[in-house]
Amino acid sequence: MGTETSGTDDLTRRVDELSAQLALARADIDLLLESSGRTGLRLDANEVEAGRTRGQADSDRERIKLLEDRAVLDRELLAEIRREGVLLEGENRSLHEALQAARAIGAAVGIVMALRGIREVEAFGVLRVASQARNRTLRAVADDVVASGDLSSLPEI
Image (cartoon, rainbow, N blue to C red; front, side):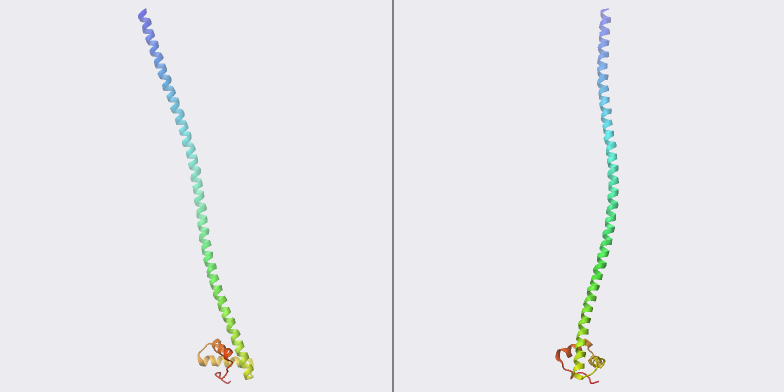
């Protein structure tokens, strides 16, 4: 019986060793499953975050596109305003020059009227004829008359 006991003891020891190894293997498997579950959860969370990030990126791209389109329109409007400003500035200069010319011509007409004793229409006609005869602008002839007060170079009408 001693041999049987010894065999049974060996068998029991062997079963105990295998049980311990099985428990360690089971613990390792549980750790791996738990770890892979966490990794899976992390992956799921990362996928959700990536989806959210993708959605935000798409939203940001749309906002950037809208802002770029708005910037193009703003640049076009500014260019148009500048063009209009230049036109208005040019018109303003032209109007200022026209006003100065009208004043000079009016003063010259007044001088011719006073010195020759004629009406306004006739005085203007004298300046116009002188302008055409000399191939000069009416303003240039008027400026000469206003500056000198001399009517000797003007035609008699």
